Amino acid sequence: MALPIPKVSLRGGNVFETILSALVVVVAIGFLAFIVVRTGTGHLGSYSLRIRVADASGLDVGSDVRLGGTKIGSITDLWLDKSNFSAVIKARPDSEIGEARRK
Image 1 (cartoon, rainbow, N blue to C red):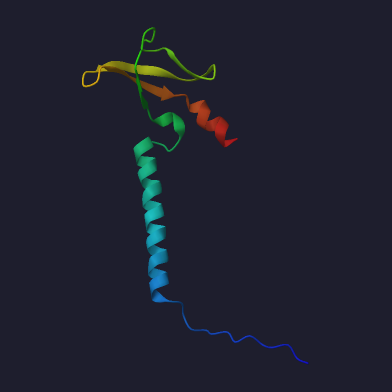
Image 2: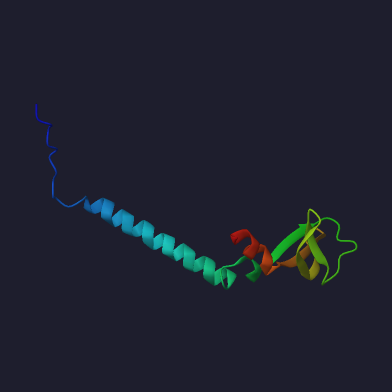
């Protein structure tokens, strides 16, 4: 008994699927371009974080930002939000964090 031979069509794919796939690729490339432009170079140390805290006593510009006792960055700016009287800290992560994560 012979095995059945599958019928293969050489007809092109669905035009809608092709257009949709191209659109997904364009959106993905646009998103990646946005991330690179927004962060400068695309790595973690190239952007700053804004952290809102209720009490910023003892903090100063240049102080370390620590997570679990490990330094992850430093404070670059500190101000009071007058709308709700909370302290806002602007911090920049160290570039080594992104590099260590990639390894």
